[in-house]
Figure 1: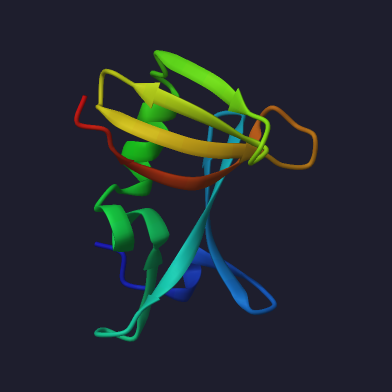
Figure 2: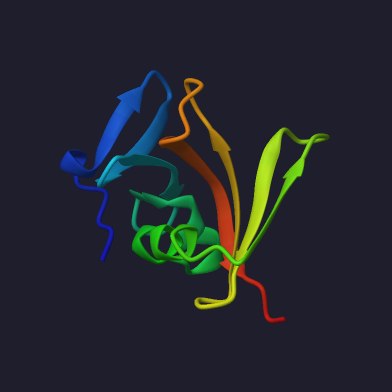
Length: 107
């Protein structure tokens, strides 16, 4: 699955990220260190068992979305995948997105 291979992430000083390009969109995911395997894996997989590919699919099928001004992020739900996404736009582009987290909503 996600084995922490260096080709999967970019190093930004002390943080590691997985960057995926899909069409005109760029998705950025934070990587967490798995203390058992000592390898990096996407936060959304490590914490919530949602793959980056599933989060991307959910993004393209958003059925509900609202802006959370308090936390400066979008909170969106995909009914097709039953996934809640929290994300923000980076670099003032609508196509460069940082996925903060994703989890099953169990509505």
